[in-house]
Length: 75
Length: 427
Image (cartoon, rainbow over all chains, first blue to last red; front, side):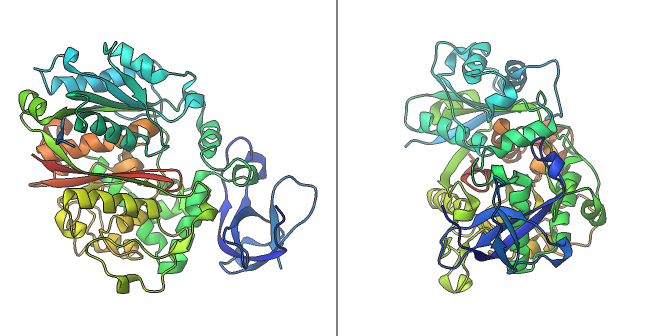
């Protein structure tokens, strides 16, 4: 599925704990992102942002690269 | 459908690990406790069993319910397993209820267990995360504490719920458990201690979450005739409801609130529901159970509730789903003191202490969460409340709700993906 380029943060959390699989990534930020005209939300990592700046409603865009998980960064 | 009764219940204390006991041994102990309450019932009179456990990967074996059924001496009667994550025990109870209500069985055993200690906490976390979507959720680093953290944050944003209100749930449930010898984590905590404990996934701290556990629980269900023959204080299952929601948290629709009998459309005008701030399956399960039990205002007609509180925020959401307070008022409901117990000192100023006790046992937060056993553990404590036998079984009557006539057990799996609500009444 092709994600729209821009959306906004519906909710978020900074994970200070993870299971074995993602332990080396801690701390990392998860965001649930809403897109206009799309009736589902997408879970992804929010990167390139200071945790104190994150808020519900924050505008984000998808990051395109070779990593195998969905990533966002502030607009 | 004919009336069905609970006639006995047993639990093992939930613990971090029982290195010397396998699942058959754990269930055997809970079963022996239950059978001790109905001395005239020979096990040859049990017509079959329904069992529940969550994870083969954690347990390290398959067909474990068949093995337990055999170990209890119940072959060649029928046995089956049901599973629905954290709601497994509730589904097990309701499946056993169906067996008796339909007339297929006169006496049916419902048992549940979980052995989580073999794999260790981090690995257990990875395995439990597989109850969410492997492609779109787990692969990103999603796990359940993170999902509940996002749900809690949205609840805070939408309704003004505070960290302090969440922490008060942990204070309450851990303090209740001080009077429950079967609880894994009894302790006296303060609000600041809960808030200041290790951050798992902001805003969820270590003390906002339950522990992983090994343990087992069972209840025996019977027809009216069998219940009256074997049990002096049977408890009737008067309402049964269950419902589901989308497997992915991000797929939750936003529509109208399913109303409970005491609510009106004007209560929730303009509220987008459920999104991730609320639990629709809990509401629908409650509505079905209330209809069957004839409950028109749960906030006035229930004497206590045992509900799913794997996270402090989950208790707040469940209180709203069940209609103990309005949707969005769960934080204020906790702050009022209503869900606390009379007669327990929490070190807090509470204006309405004890008006609607929630998780008198200590809940999952303090009793532990041996996933497949949890719903039945909740049911056992509710049974003892309605029999007035809390003091007898716990060796301390502090947690006995006086004159308890009607109680409710709420079990919940996934992110509210599968929920059961069962109403119980003193016969």
